[in-house]
Image (cartoon, rainbow, N blue to C red; front, side, top):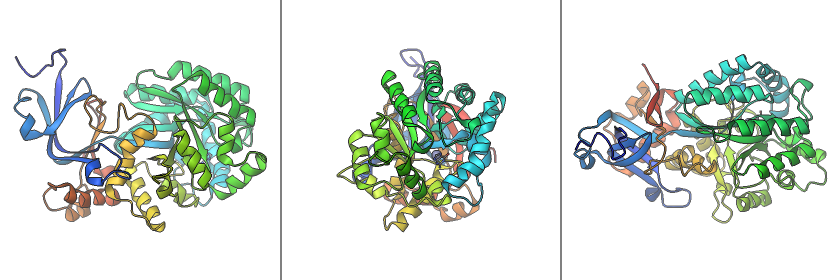
Length: 449
Ligand code: GUN
Ligand code: ZN
């Protein structure tokens, strides 16, 4: 009997290259026990899922008959996971000169207005998803705009590409222009309809998405909490404590709230499927509460630097006493790149300014399994464990002349040597390092030159 087909008759595929993924959190376990590296590995897929990984030499006889795509000198990693990004802001990336609140008024709100037009939203969603794949990002937690059409456009495009994406309609019923405002009642009703339409369709998930406390009344936040109760498994996605002026305004708007996070907490929005972007200005008590609630923070270094918001305390989120799940977020368009490699590069520099060291393995963990854990998707995604969905990327550590010069020697054979190479990838790598992106084992993007 041929090994070409499994007992269920489904076809098998193999991918040969250096396999790199994480089986544990290197912030809490010894790094060398957290990382899994197979210098000349074979990953065998069955029906888009990981069936087996191992050393090529050990597996090759058993899989002698299957088609194997060989990527010599390339690194195969799980697809990157972006835990916070805004698709309607694609066209306004690199908007000059402002900090958060002025930036929203001057650039963001006028841009998001365009997404009432579904055809326009579809064009941008398509471009956005192509850009994610070009950068090796296979899953993201995404803000749409306030208009339900913008959510439909996004999920339709994601569905065409068979992507695992989480998104939601922005809810905002005050302190925003009329053309972008909903009401507490309409946001509840429209969100409910969108959840019923999209949540758990194929690989899609819904996130209830109040923009932030400034643009929502207490009533709207309460209704967001009601939706979470009515639809367990749906996510909560919002911004939290990003900028000093924002935090001061929040205090004025909710004088008796007892802190920014507490506003969300009182509305029932702080739980184990809640993802809060930024958290730059969080207090110790808020970190503790996020830890207790098993909520996650999206660390968005390029955005936090671009808008001058500040230096996220990653070491506090990763404390052993009150650990909080953390993923990396590009936060594009306040973030300055779609690349999670570039985002990890800036995360390293933020850590340096805080007198901390973000090792290459910690950075790559945040971009993969850490992100999957932050999004409660680690039963399906984030590494190459048997049974996981095979969204993965092929990375070239010699993708530019300078990287080729820096990494001229043969591929590392030990994990220790790999750390140095991986660091160069984190610091120097970007979209050019992504040779190919596979979704459930199917080629979705390939670099042509
Ligand atoms: N806070 C509220 N809205 C936004 C947004 O669109 N981007 C960022 N970075 N912060 C926000
Ligand atoms: Zn954001």
